[in-house]
Length: 366
Image (cartoon, rainbow, N blue to C red):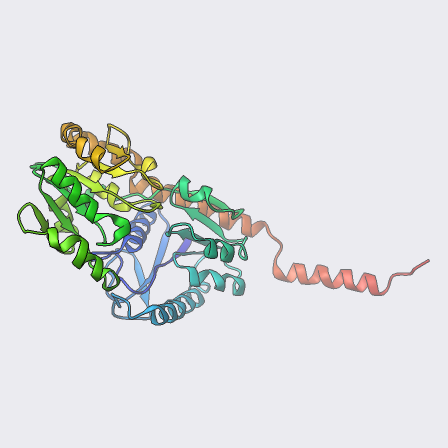
């Protein structure tokens, strides 16, 4: 079996810093390869994922240059990748909306992983493509959709990339986009209420610059509240393994929250607000705590500090490994290919239609 994984063209696979979908594609690609599946990743030329790579755009394009530019780039990249993949692969796995429309033009089976929060406009779009195999990344996400071919496969991580031993656990951490729905302003409030210093890491996107300037930056003093910039893999490991807890005070229905299992892989429990898939990812009293409000989050810091890094790490190894994720995707890919092979070929369908038409034209009416 040879599978094409098509990532968006904007960020390398794996990402150097920000890029949840790109991290997922990298982990899945290498996990499938370990399962004995041939994989081709369609990405940009700066990617370093350890499988065969093909690209149309040599350089990353992040941050994107506006909605129209990004849509046209993604459409062009997806069309080129799919046209190439149908000649070399048995199945195509896509991770952006524009690629779905091209399924009408090919006979190669397609799988699509939904990476976004529920949006009615997109759900209506998906309804026009019922033959695609859809993957939800949480049960919460899946229950909001109505596509007939859909299953949940939780994300997984190669925990070998994350270190947890020897963590000092001296501060709280926040890792994610500096955006209102991610709640860094609430993380600051938790730190102040608990009396534990906070380190904030993440990308400040242009569209949220005003939020940073008004809601976050005024509290950053470089001592108790510190902004450490964007975090690459080495910086993530250092930040998370030394955390009393990683704060996840989301203000939206998180479809999965990959950063939560990254924290757990570093032995850091997650203290989160409820929303979306949080309860599916955080095991209460085992890998962290799910809270109703900021006050409860602050009160849980003593409990979080008592959780052992080894136990938190063991939980994510058991529930969210790359091996588990890759095995579930491999099973889906095999089932999808087998089901497609059982369908009549296009020539057989055309011949059957022709015979039906011929019989109708030459029938004798009594």
